[in-house]
Image (cartoon, rainbow, N blue to C red):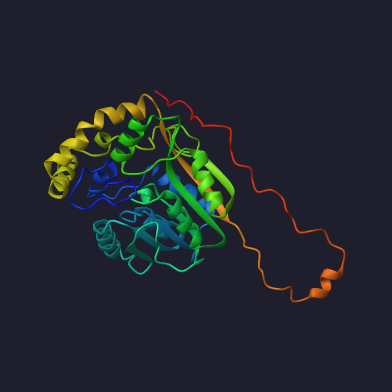
Amino acid sequence: MTSTDPRPPGRGVPSMLDLVRLSPRPLFPPGGEALYRQIAVLTGMTEGTEVLDVGCGKAVTLEYFVREYGVHGSGIEADSRLVDEAVDRLRDRELGGRVQVQQAPADALPYRDEIFDVTVGEVGMTTGVDPAQAVRELVRVTRPGGAVVLVQLVWLAPVDPRRRALLGEHLGVQPRILVEWKRLLREAGVGDLHTEDWSDPETAFRPGGVKPFPDFAELFSLSEKIGILRRAWSRWGWAGVRSVLAREREVHRLLTKERILGLDLLKGVKEEVASSAPDPEPEAELEASPEPSTADPEPRDTRGLPLFSPESP
């Protein structure tokens, strides 16, 4: 199976994203509530803002945006089980009319062009799809001048192919280095890029001591872990559960001691497309005027791999 093929349900080995999503307790994605509050501030969410969240899982972040900022939320999730859980949960909370969640792949969004004010690509957006095509789809459905946001894992340093494959398979997503995420956005027509490092527990944007992606063992109580593993067993069997738990120690070492993976927020603006229609007042062009701007686009960041600040003890 290639990295861009969706994982057949009931087969294979569960990733850590799969296991976390099996939790009956609604959880914010990596970064927590503080990160999504920052997204709302950066994009200027207000009453009636049309927001699309791709890779929305159980729609925890969409619920937050709707409750706190009064937006109209739409969510896309590839896993039909998570969609069903999200719909049931939102109905119980009487938000069914303000949030719509449906199943679809991130690389083929079921929307017409340019209808959302803000689009957000979650960490889970890259599961089973080509990240470049997923970014293009995200930009396609954003209106010109609208905000495009990515919350994605980034490699902090060169990683050998074996470890990269191990981590990608274990996490269930496809990290890239920061300059690659920037390139994908620029090539899709997004400018005015702004990035923030959300990897350091002591970042200025987050309350002290909150990890961006805590260990599976730290997220849940013993009873919750037993429940999750039982649900995993029913879907993947004991072989799959044993495999992912056996890799836990190695991946924990790579993430915490070698510090090769981080979390970044990227926000940009979909650029306006110049109209090809004739000028309705051609007489105005008789006046002396400068040639249309041919300024070079924003130069690509070629400074190398960014390194995050050291973690606090």
